[in-house]
Image (cartoon, rainbow, N blue to C red; front, side):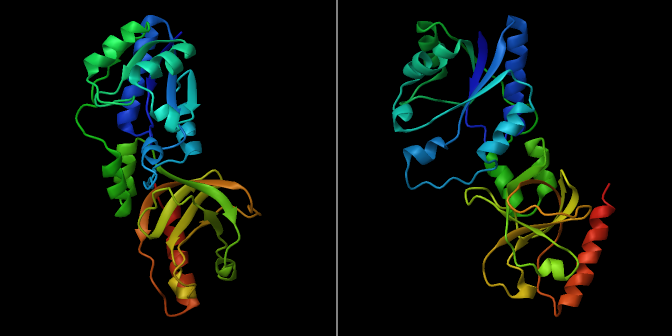
Length: 284
């Protein structure tokens, strides 16, 4: 049997982690396993076809972060128009009850199911299908929201964003063919495809950490090389040499180094990249 909670959990930020810790406490007291029920599709994108989500985590990143919380099981359910049409009672009966959920912990401001409902309604519907519904308390001391995190990222304030997330902001994607200018400068880069739904931080140069060691990330249009208006995401891995084409690469953004700007020559750019490299290596 499970103590469960449900939500989209974009970013798996400190507010989500507060909820999950409460879930683990309840499960321990009741000698139950823990279950997180989440969705791959953003619910609003299903309900409103014109809505384009700006996500803090891809589905893969979200699962990875949820797994790190130590819960027993994570179920990703399909969220389509049929699911969106279910009432809260129907959702409990058709989705949660068959999974063995006996306790449902709801976020203090969370709602699910088609139609309006108060928390007392969820408690009553839960009793009808044998699920005890409990309300979680809010994270004390600081209000954490996805909107606040997106705002910080848009300003390049990745360290402050990490403080709200409870982890470094992640960018991950497949390594694709690039322009090869970095290789000519002695700073070969891996060009990464990032899904358009992912929140992109402010353009510029960042210090990052990867499973291949430290790196320098550039987000921008590469003005010195005059490559047009296309925004690229490319990273120079300081302690790595090898071929990463076609592989998945995940970056943790540590700090903003500088804005992207056009240099008068490639030699000036090379000199700046050397300074950026020293900055990253001297980070504590």
